Image 1 (cartoon, rainbow, N blue to C red):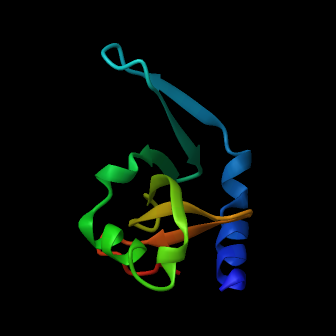
Image 2 (cartoon, rainbow, N blue to C red; image 1 turned 180 degrees about the horizontal axis):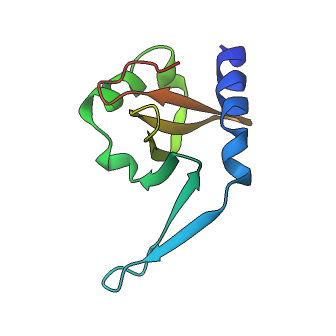
Amino acid sequence: MKKLFLAATLAFAGFSAAQASEAKSKSNPIEIVTTVQDSVTKTPVKLEDLPEGIKTTLASEPYKAWTATAAFLVKDEKAKKEWYQIDVKKEQETGSIKLDKDGKPVE
């Protein structure tokens, strides 16, 4: 299980070096940051706004032992793919999970 989370974390390490553009809403003081790398965009999503399929998956084994800390909608325009990246934490361990809108793991 640790290998799965480590692999997912390493897969997204490249996103940390991407340039970020900021969009600020006048009616909402919360800052929204969208990261763009080539044809891939990563937009923050509130945990409570995740699709029901993802919430169900996160509440099931083996994910229920982990706590979701952040979520992002990732869109790859070139490959025409879309998935959610959910950052998770369990005690001192952290990781990321990639799920489609139905809660199925994405490779």
